[in-house]
Image (cartoon, rainbow, N blue to C red; front, side, top):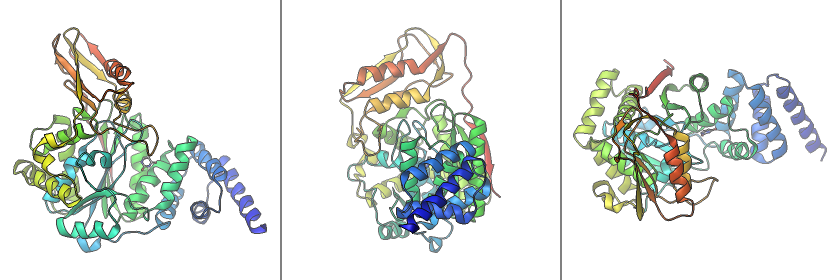
Length: 443
Ligand code: URA
């Protein structure tokens, strides 16, 4: 009992120091993280500490220590027998199905792709949910299955095993319940601890900026990117952060099976321009970081070849089959889930699309059933939105600008209204949005 009291008092001192703008040593941060993970430090104390971090921040050394401690809370995969392994991660957005395109393309170019993805939360979609649109697709591979599949076909996309950075899982759940998610050192260490534990040698990060992203403005996105690059460098990882627009949804489809269909079309060479551009950029950077191409030009040419010759699509088929999914859906979209009703939204007058609020489209798709408000909620893979027009496009009166795939839920009408309200129209020509907003990278 005396030991417990001493521990609680020591934690109070650390909370107070952070509250007052001080810094913690590496040992002190490790004490908090391991103590919490073991259940020795209660939720209320760690919540207070996290809130102090939200207000006072952490310097680079503290952030690196936090990351290292979260990595040390579980196992760290050693993938060196596969050569250089490059991971790809997006900080999350609306309609972001880039992984479904990039992972098979890069694997088709001979770079092993060992990806642990997450589920969607709030208006941000998740790769695992999307992949479950292939009936039977398993997202719960064991570490042994993960490694065996990587060896066999050079690609694996599954959920994170519980043994990797377990402290992050616990801390994230606490942050989610205590309003302490939006702090750059916490987000950066959370993302990077998982990448480091999963054994990557390099990581290509897509840091989304805009209404449909965590980071609403370029300055915060840059700060997050810098923090992640610094963590990577401190742990011997090469890191590239592309800063990209998330003020309108990416591509045209939002919603799980709809996004899978769009990713397949993209691998067939018929994708929307913004998704194709992002996939080529991320894929080429992965090849360069994985030392499969000597420069960006050569890498882009290889990605383009994998798009043109169908080898990227073939890799997706192989991936889906290997993880128990119905690979027939890759060739015939009738094998993907379909919503029973499609509502078309038509333009009341001829005008240019001035803006499409990504957050509103994302929230509407959650209401349609495509996303979840809380962890563990069920979702409907069939529902969502397909945008027929993006910012800058001219839509003629009476022409459809979006179609909404609905399953007959009570909130369908309000979701449809929200999608209508997400569009801003202009009588004057509007320039398309800039997609690539910057890049911050280690050497
Ligand atoms: N994604 C993560 O993995 N962690 C965060 O804290 C935020 C986004």
